[in-house]
Image (tube, rainbow, N blue to C red; front, side, top):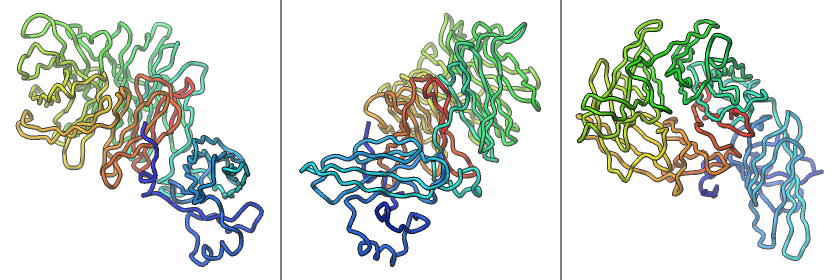
Amino acid sequence: MASLDLKAWLPGVCLLVLVACGEERPSPLPAQLPEEAAEGLPRAAPPRVFQLERANQGPYLERTVERFRAVSSSTEVKSVLWSASGGKLETQGLQATWTLPRAGDASLTLTAETQDGAQLTETYQFRVSAEVSSLPEGASSNVPLAPVAVDTSSDTTGSMCDLAFDPAGNGHLIYDRYPHNSIWYGFWNGTTWNTQQVDGLGFNTGGSFQGPMALAVDPTGKPHIVYVMAGRGVWYATLSGTTWIRERIDPVALPPMNVPSVGIALDPSQGNRPTIAYGYYGPIPSGGNGYRTVVAYRTGTAAWTTSLLTFPTASVSTDQEFHGELLFDPTGTLYMTVGDFSLGTWKAPSTVAVVEFSNNAIYASEHISLARTTAGHVLMRWDGYLLDVTIASPLSASTGRLSLIEPAASYVGDLIFASGKPQEVHLHGSRLEFVAPGADNYWTYTDLGTAASSARIALAQRPTTGVVHFCYQSGSKVTFQ
């Protein structure tokens, strides 16, 4: 994994020049000191061995994550130990990730050992303010939340999850529970999570949730969910008030393949009509059996129009299985990844098109993430790659430019386009890593902490603050950050 080098931190660096513990310190401890105060500090105390560089800006807020780097001009420093008065501290050499404690005074202490064995200790004092939810909207837009376990039941939760926000900034989350195979929904009002069961094992109702699943949220804040039940096909669920409406989608003639991919998107040209896709294996029009994609759109309560798609590839018998996510453009054209290296489109009721890319871009992930740029490009993320597709008419004339994110494949990840750039998260061994291009378009890599091996993780940007949030599994629990 690429390390957090200094260049990656420069856009958000804020230099902290603080006096030693026990001396009179400025209040509040600022991201920036007045020039005259800064000039006076060296006269009040001997120069410090270290200066701290901070990745964030703005106030120090309880339960948020701060990242620091200790910089020393001395060549005599051999090693450094960090400690904190409270909160959670993770360190690696000269870097520290600190989940701040509750509001009040807090401190970081650095103990340095020099080449001759001497120890030097320096303490930095901080005034931690009230949590994010108590501040005015937008005041903490550049500060990531500390990880929060959304569901603390005795079950294992969140081996797969999906995350979205509505225009009001409320968070919506779906995730699984095991071994009581079920699918759950969480709602976040910016402060707390409330969870409820969508489907699962019951008396004369429900069944065993199998997965996968996907989530979309309409402009009114209503969730729309697609998921797979073991032996019971593909299902759609949505809330009507406080009641879950559940509908089976797949017809008898078009059952899903054993472990299909599923996706859902809302058609903006049809009043945000729910549209889903899933993978199919069975009889195909050209004869024999083959892998195909099924698309269905909702025409009313428990009413779905379903189509088996055949894309105009060089050979219609090739693999055309659906992989991952759906994406609408404003005109109602639906984009999806199919087969080994193709991007397909569909527009109701039956128009299909496809562009095939070189097989050196073959998909190994079952879940391919899609995002649309402000310029109308389609971005595709899988393994350690991002493909930037310039859409043309006809679609087969589209071109793609491939960028490597990681030399080693990262099969589980997600992608969005936000704040004018692609932003990606993936599992890197037992770590969760967030990736986005810097000002020079070189990738910057941010370690978000430990995460469990999962089938699905997700990220989404909260529109009211601009903060990018994540869902993943940590410590056998579904986690939001």
